[in-house]
Image (cartoon, each protein chain N blue to C red):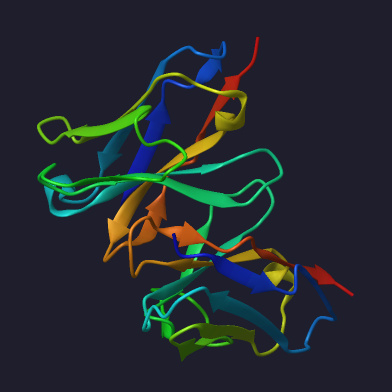
Length: 117
Length: 107
């Protein structure tokens, strides 16, 4: 059974940093592109970032480029999202998602990030 | 960036009726289009990929069609569990993008 468990969310002040993690199990982690997708309160879905299985390629939404960094540790089946220079508009539930030909076939339960003073 | 526009924003349908949701892309994306369902308080679920291929375990009442810039999700006979928000998603080019969603509500 595929499981994705996010951690690391919470309240942070504008301009601050936070690192999200996603522990994956139930599939061959190294074989799949992984993604972060977010959803602001009461809003729609927004893809944030993706990383290839070997970490050779990383991709970002324009809204986070230069501020967020995606990475993965294949030895620990873990995905990360380092978020710097956080803004109020980054407030959202962040989902870790397993890629399947660039669709998202499995999602974590999500972790809330609140950026507020 | 590829802009995805969904219509209508809200669709009121009676149980047992047919629902037709639309998604338009700002440029051609072939058939690299997926649909997701999200119920309140739940994570999104993949329904359709490749514009028309049902994901594992998705009932046959869900069907997708279209190519290029115009796509449709049809729910042939709405069940109570189908009232939710539906998102289209293009994966033809980076950055990946979603439509704004269509809420299917009980009439």
